[in-house]
Length: 266
Length: 315
Image 1: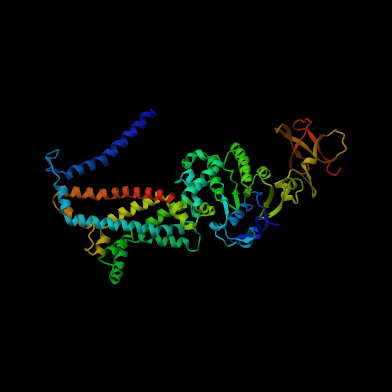
Image 2 (image 1 turned 180 degrees about the vertical axis):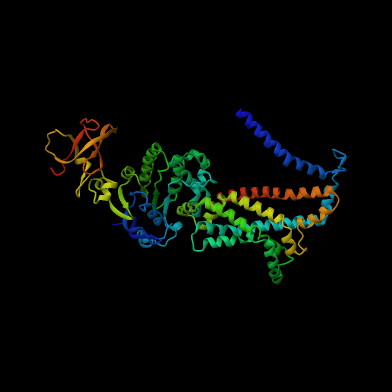
């Protein structure tokens, strides 16, 4: 009886995965290479790579992919650079006004980011950052940095300070301890921070539109207009590209982290 | 005297609370000193102060006659080992041991050599490429010890290093560590709450309670001649009687009708008995003091029988 229940549960989970993940992905991929897949036909009439070729031959899209990835990767790196020391400070040190500071760091996601972006837009124009890549990168920090600080803080909380103390009492300097012990031990948190801020940056439309002023063209900027076009084949291909970017990033990140730990240990 | 470490009136206060009040002691080169105290007596804080992980509020710490009060942890030739091994999980056993040597601008070859040598001494060299999570608790402690000793510290601080292990492992590892420390000639300061451990390992014991040193000296001297009530309770066995302390070795149990020349100091009932190390011990509940006393006797007594406690101290 118990076993029956167990297998029943597995079957339900499997069906669920098939229905909501495998099935849509298969449909999407098929859609991107099939023509004439309309109502009375259960299966596509014929297959063609026309959708993908169209996508590839469109310089605007290729350009947008580059821009998007450059922005997203910069956002990830800035997130790690800024969030790490802040989170360490909040987690490992006691000082007056710590709670207030923590709340301040969380504010950007408590206040609608559009409201902040509108105000920041004026400042960015004054500073000459609007309509520029760097301006967009900075504005993408708004919806990402608070999460990154939170996630790193959780990591530092869990790690505690003893590892660093142990390493220092052996005779290793603080900075080296950080890069060789703390940083590698935060790997799970770095992974989540990187992926989350990458995906958030990737899906920004409004913030990019306001600060980028249509000059900085990221994938979402052309994704929307594309959606209005009639060719479903191209849209399917486009969507796959969009979905594949984070997966590729995650793979590259894994490789980098492996290499990093390997170098650090030598 | 040429002490390796000399602690002079060290004080530590934290948020208006005195944790250590004027601690003074010294340890000679090659000596193993055991700091014994109940939990919360400040013994861990003392080690952290010596390691430089906590700033001290007053006093001096002299290492080889040099003041190290303001020297950063990483620059003090003092290594602290915590209760848990804290082996870096992303490094193999050998990489863990070599971790500190990297700071010393040594060639990779000599680092590996020194690491392997030390792993040999701690009998862990066959595990050199293993990751820490695959090791048992005792093995992890051995690696942690190798990682500390490979740095050739002037002073090694051990913060209850055996307390996370089970009884059997603790006993075997303790003897083994003690022998290795002696063989390497490492000056060691060990913190423990276990008085047997302190007696076995320590060339000298330092008794700490409520942030004060109660007494220090050779284990047998402190055991036989406790200076105050705290020491009597913490370290010695015996009977506290109206201001005087009678060590257990002068006490005897006698049945009520026994004829003896010894002085009767107290009366009580046998509440239980147990065997240990081939001897029979009786737990006696004393009448007037409401305390329990454990004494060995060759005579046989039944549970619940009334007995006399005799002393032959000033005979």
